[in-house]
View (cartoon, rainbow, N blue to C red):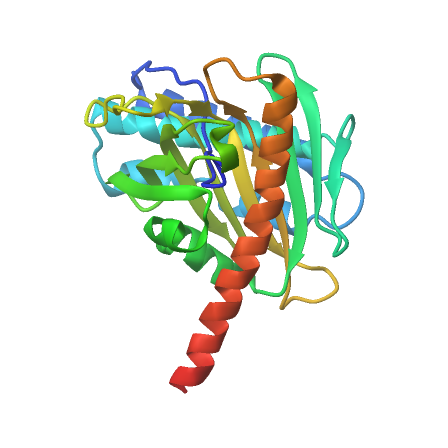
Length: 284
């Protein structure tokens, strides 16, 4: 259903960056603080990889001057990543929604000021780089392999890691949930062998509400892809999903649809990656 598309997004503030230095310090301190919380007992190499190169925002600013609106989008993407990391770092309070025979699992918890969030955890027989290429570099092709997504379009790119997108979700079977669309700011990062795709809903003057669609909101949401500890050729794939579908829809239906959407996404992504691997073999 609406979704899968990584609707990484949620509430936005349009306070334009007044001071680049202050913004840089605030964003980096906040992200480093949350990354520190993530490094609990046990292996946390992917956390240290992010921390070692967490000066991305400052490097972007030095590369090229951005206007106030572009800086606002960059800040929103960084905030989505920070909030998502904070949520994922807290292992308490998660309730199991669905567990598949292959071990795929969807869990949920209710958070103040956000509401119910869902977390998909799966193990995929792919390297993180391959998945990053499909989900980020080929983002606009998602509608070709994910039946829950009608279309994904990149409206604007800002630097190397930030983009504004428009996603149109396919109708659910029986039209239980009518057509929804989302305008999102996304932050895509690669830190060592770990990849991130985070985001939240935003406003974009070039994409007003569309006829026949309800403009829903999402976020913070985030996909984290890191190598499995047991087999570096496999990926521990985690997807945090938070959606406000708007309109009048019973919560029981929303919970069922969103958790099933995440399970379906894992299935469709596996099929897509298998097809890519087959095509590569045939090309050799």
